[in-house]
Structure formats: C-alpha cells, structure tokens
Amino acid sequence: MKLSMVLVPVFTMLSFSNLSLDHLNPYDIPHHINISWKTDPATSQSINWRTTELQKISYVEYCEATASPFFSNSVQRQKAESNAHTGDDATWNYHSVNLTGLSPNTQYSYRVGNGNFWSEWAEFKTATGKEEDFTFIYFGDVQRDIFSMGSRAVRQAVLQRPDAKFFLFGGDLVHRGGLNKENWNEFFPTGGWAFQNIPILATPGNHEHIVAKSGENMGQQWYYNFTFPENGPKGHDEETFYVDYNNIRVISLNMCRYKYAEDRKAILEWTEERLKEFKGDWVFITHHYAMHPSARNRKPGLRFPEFKALYEKYKVPVILTGHEHLYARGRIDDEFPVYVVSVAGPYQNAIQFQGWEERTGTSLQLFQEINVSQNEIHYVSKTILGEVYDEFRITKSENGEMKYTIGEDLPPQSLLPPDRFEERYKKELVDSWEEDLKNYLILHP
Ligand SMILES: [Fe+2]
Image (cartoon, rainbow, N blue to C red):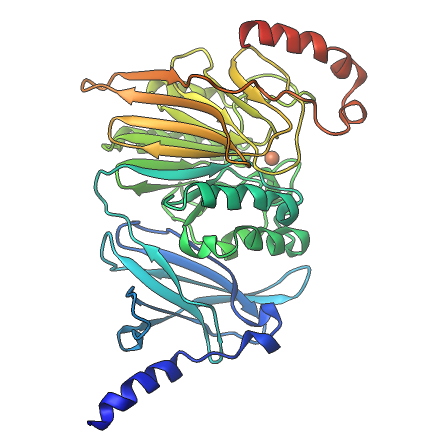
C-alpha cells in the first residue's frame, strides 16, 4: 500500500479540524454571517461576518461544492477586508469579501474565520443568468422583538420556500440601526443559518438611521453588516442600488433622503435611467416608506408624487414598501403599479382607509412569496403560519400588455385593531374606527 493513500484522508480530516464548540462563547467563532451581492449574482457572491476584537484578520475558504467531505485540496482562500467598529456592546471586527469570477448556476461551499475559529461550512448557488422560473421572499418591517417574534416570519418563509433565491427586506430590519444590543445582535440569529445560504438584499428604513424619526444619519452597522452594490447615485452606495437577477431587476431606493432636494433629484434621475435601460422582463422597486401613509395616526397624502408619476410612466408592476406596520395592497389612480405595504414583525398599527386599498390587514405577521417567470409575476402573501392571506398575478402578453388578476377564495381580512388601540390613538381615531371599517368592507368585503 502506498503511504499517500493512507495519509491523504487523515490530512484532510486534520486540516478541517476546529475547536470543539463546547468550550467557546458563541461570539468567539465568526457570527452574523450573511451573503448578498455587490456585483453580478451569476458570477459573484458577497459574504459578511463579525468577529471579536482580537480576530483582526479573517478569511473566506471556498470551493465548488461536493457531497464528499474530502474537498480540502480544492479549497481556495481569500483574505477579507476588515474594519474595527466600537458599538454599544463591544469593539468588533467586521469582515467582508466579494467573491468574483464564479461560474454561473454552480453550488459553492464556504466557511469564514481564521486559526482555530471557523464557522461551519455552508453552501450558496450562483444564479443561472438565464430566464427561468424562480421565487424570492419579501419582508416588511421586522424592527421590534426581533428575535422573539420577528424570527417567526423568517423561519416560516424558509420552511415554506427553501428554494427561494433571495430575501428582500423593505427596511426597518431593526429598531435602532446604530445599536447592536437588542438590534443587530438579534437580527442575525433571527435568520440563523438561513442567512448563510440564502442571500439578503435590503433597503434602508428610517430605523436603520441614528435619528430614526426623520431617517437621518445612517448607522454605520448598515455598511459593515452588508455588502450591497455601489451602482447608485454618487454618495448613495449600498442604499440606493440595483441588482439584476436573471430576468428581473430589483431596485432599492433610500427614500429617507427624499427630503433633501439634491438627493431627491439624484435618486429620481437615476431611477429613470435604470427603468429606461432595462431590457429584462420585470422590475421590482422597494423603498421603506409607503406611497400613502396608511397608519391611522399619520397625516394622509402622497409621499413621493414625482416617483409615483415615474412608476406609472414606465409601468413598474410592483412597488414593495413597509413602515406602516400593517398590510395594504392596491393601485393608486392608475392600473400599475400595484403597491404593497407589509409587516413581518409584531409591532402593528391600526389602518386609516384612504380609498386606494383593495385588500388590507392588521394584527398580522406576514411575508410574501414572489414567483417570477418570463410572462408572469405570481404574488402570494402568507401569514407566519404559512396560510395564504393575499394573492395576485400580473401576466404579460406578447405585445407587452400587462394584466392584473386578484386571487380567488381569499380568507376574510384580518382587521382587528392592534394591542392597546385605545391608549395609542387619539379618541376621535378610536371613535371613528367602526364606521370607517364598515364603509371599507362595503366596497371590499
Ligand atoms: Fe419605518
């Protein structure tokens, strides 16, 4: 027997050895691992993670995935870009890598770490870059009781659609974007290992900013925790951007900057260029603030009239939003777009009906499965128990004409006022609720 035949498997096992988890603080190993995209989903994958202050240098090890555990000889290593940041809980090192030059439609295995401190191996698969049927998942605000209650949405979505190609978060992933405690330290365990296998895309909400009320001063953790594209207007990197996944374009707009005339102009012009140039099949736009403030205690009125006009001009099929902490779906004045407002987390608002809503919901945690094919968007909104709550299809004929069809046999709308309704809302908003609800249900039973 040749010596090498004996040694190779032994070496393989040793090279993948790790300290037993038994004696480690969970933060000693790389954590908050998530994958996303900075560049083309068919040929690249961005990977982000956090380590303790002591682990200043960190690596990604990766290779094409095999079912065999004996793959150490094909592993490549890439050093991360690393930044130390002192948060409210400790100083951490944030690491990121953008793997490029990957093969389309290929599964890869990877792990992150250094020395004795490594994550487990996980897999991701690059996009085909071709037209095919696929699904992605949308989440409205998670924001509060993130780990305790928000995790119900993420985990049920994974159980329902483990084949989802990515998660799209519509902002307010956390309540205080500048804090780790009770915020980012809860958000990542909320997705657990799923964030290591299924890429995340997200648009910033007002709560990712330090001044949450007005959405000013982005918490630095946004840029450290994620690696998103830098293809937006100048100075809007990783906030306003687009990703082309096969035949669809996903556009994130950080509308917290809308209030500044210069930013508003830059985002509007950039969005028009992205809509004009797109040759694929479907565009989805996400921004945190809904087009209409639908929460009962907010001043009614259109938030972004110039953008509404742009969406109508380019017939954007679907706009995915949040911020209102309730569910609403409908059109405003025109046949398209269909506006969606959703909420994944437990904090809920009572609704203020404004006439545009075709279906609504309150006191509900939801997520959306968005199934895309060349000629159809099939949208299914589910509760965190996996029950269908809302459904519609948008089909496109050969001449590009779109048709919108609402699902049949939908369950009754959940319109229970949220917890502490009478304490949280002004008396006149409480007193007028029954009448408003009755009038809405006459039109939308
Ligand atoms: Fe918000």
